[in-house]
Amino acid sequence: MGTLKGFPYPPAMVRRRRSRRAPHATISAINPAVSDLPPNVKGMNDILPPEVSKWQFVEEKARSMLESFAYHELRTPILEYTPLFVRSVGEDTEVVEKQMYTFTDRDGQSVSMRPEGTACAVRAYIARSQWTREPVTRWYYLGPMFRHERAQRGRLRQFHQVGAEVFGLAAPSVDAEMIAMLVALLADVGIKSSDLEVAINTLGEPEERASYRESLRGYFSSHLDKLDEGSRQRLQTNPLRILDSKDPDIQALASHAPILLDVLGDASKQHFEAVRSHLSALGVQSVVDTKLVRGLDYYTGTIFEVKAKIGDLGAQNTLGGGGRYDRLVSSLGGPEVPAIGFGLGVERVLLALAEPAEEFEPVLALFIAVLGEKAQAWALPVAHRLRLQGVRTELEHRTASLKSQLKRADALKARLALIVGDNELQSGKLVLRDLATRQQHEVTEAELEGKIRQLVDF
Ligand code: HAM
Image (cartoon, rainbow, N blue to C red; front, side):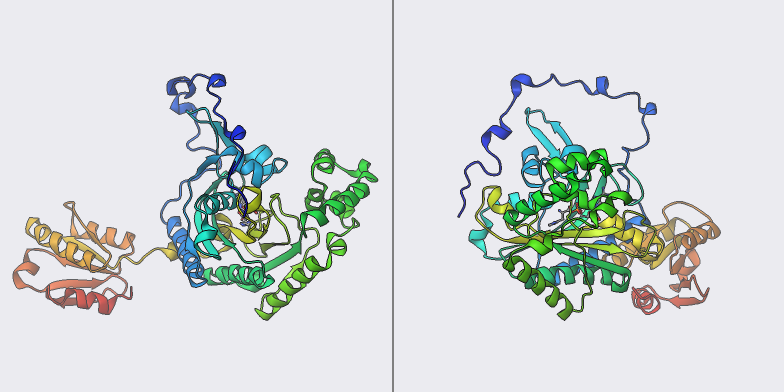
């Protein structure tokens, strides 16, 4: 068991620096006139109806799939102390180096808006000594992440992930189970597995990677003139990342570089082979991509990415990615617990789904059009009762002509309109109009709910 002392970072890393703290600027001093500002913070969007229905659809499908695989939901704060990400995601990664929203809070401590969820899950895992409660923990989360990237289609500064993490299982069957779950989740949402590419690779153990790093350094150093500025820097900090370059010339160079898989020890190779055979047993087609490295430092062993071959995603076609991080829990002060997880980008999944958002909107079963004060008084409790029975109902509260009320019912795509005026109330015979067929049904108040359920499938 590892020690919790200094978890998740040594005290020196979070020391308060009151003395060096800049005095707080007043809001009025830092805020330019509202009219000078763009309408919203770049790369951070409102999610409005009807789009929000498509979001809810994806979120519900994801929840239901994860619950079937016996995962429990985890909710962690948006803000974490900055060293958590520095120590897990890695100091030399793009995410930590260039993309984090980091600031000093009013206590003089450096905090960051979470750029990803794994580090947060691991912190929570260690903080409550989760391994003492259960040997295997399956957690999932859904929520916003923040990275100051160049905003474009499929790449935002506030984006959302569905993430899953399993702690306590080292077997290759878990790696395959997780990848198969991700593919099944996407299929459930409406993205067929034939429209996906599942790329897998293994990073082996850190010790194995260390000697490979040197041979890679040697290879790229002998082609220094062909490297761009970024790759030259990576040559020093992490040459594996050069393999991940999007530059076609560097990709060509990388295609002749030594391959990590070739130099791994038997245990790593066997684990990887077992993952592949479990995947085929589960019916998941995967391709081995020896250039796949992922952009976060905590990975060991199996890594994977799922790319969409459909939709208008351009370079942002990686819907999700993940891998093993068997050393992270212990490196943050917990015991040695193997772990694996993935993060799925919700915005990218939505872009890959061709159906317009309107198709995901819930059905408005009933619009109650009221004519006159008596009808209005009658309709209020009736609508209330129907709503409490789960009949999605809109009630007109304004005084308007029948024509304009029915126009609004059409605009709201209501399935039925209940037309209530003095005559209907006197006779006790209400008019229920099917707005698609224009067919009218006469009903009493007692028959109303039953008739709605008969006519509308919801
Ligand atoms: P990641 O590859 O950095 O992994 O992110 C996972 C997914 O989040 C990406 O495949 C992408 O769909 C989405 N994503 C990332 N950045 C953006 C962005 N700026 N805009 C829109 N979508 C974005 C992780 O975050 C790891 N925590 C995954 C993991 C969990 N590994 C182990 N456990």
